[in-house]
Image 1 (cartoon, rainbow, N blue to C red):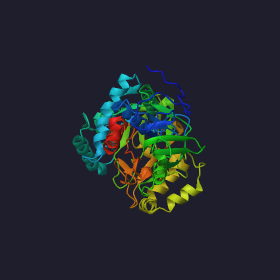
Image 2 (spheres, helix red, strand yellow):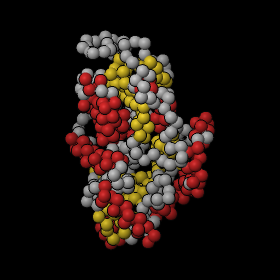
Image 3 (tube, one colour):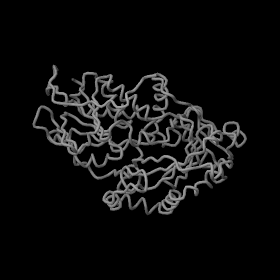
Image 4 (cartoon, rainbow, N blue to C red):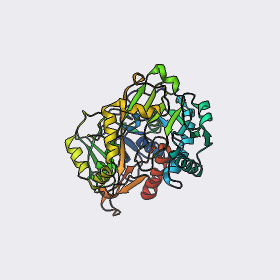
Length: 444
């Protein structure tokens, strides 16, 4: 098992070192590429850059004091098998590739994980057709070894669960994605990368020094770089606007609030149990997720967070909420799903309201078996027409190479769910785009 330091922060100063470069003196805070964002996609990208070209000087900055503080450390922990996504899309392909690469990576690095499987269960006759459509989609995507099973077979996999029919995905698994992110960070450092925490980007400017760009933090610390890639998650639209990109896709912060199953009742859930998704709704609905620590998550719901990183109703940013509510796309989405939004808010305020949905699958779970659990905030990319961005979106503000700030900064504006499962392929695709767009990086 690889031991990861709790905090591998690197301090940086102007410190000349010997370096044979075609351009730019190699200073401690001077890099060929700067990656912004210390979540799983940011570290996967930074790691991929140095895997592809070990001669690059690469640093990663993160506004928090460690990796995976937000989405990467506040998720269900599922290794997805690519059933849900539209066949032929990059999202579907990256999820299947990510499934195999994740298991390979976890095994190679002795990261605890479990291939516990998943059932997607129809509890009503009206859901059977959608279940079969989903099964056909999974087959077309190449989801490994999925099969349709009947109600009796459900009991052989989940003895306490009821349903009419189900899709069984034996290769769906679980892992702690925060641990995976820390391993990516350790890989990055071993390859020669620099990690700088507590660096919240305040501006991107053209540099008058030996590098093309100057990146400043809120506390007036500066870093120089020739190229930048931002993987900002919940902050990705704000980072994009700093360099003159278009307004959308906006990042809508969606808070998911889980319930915890009493540990004495954790035997009721063996693997992941999911509902048949309603295609008219934007989110999946209640599901059952075992965790690596032995706990079981139930849920989550989905409510609009009142702050970009708002993990409770007490986390409020009036200015940010008003900004979002003024956006056409947000208003269109809320208007379309107003009933769904009200129901989710009620479930947030009164968690017991979720019990009826839970008991459709496992009747033995009672009110005193559940309690409030952890929350996470999902960065949901949203187009101006009110539809959700479902694939990888990379953007550069300008193709004019003389406009250094607009041309030399690439933004990852949407990393499609499930971005943790797909993180290694996403990082590779981003690096492909970087090296194709900025060919000088190949020559260093």
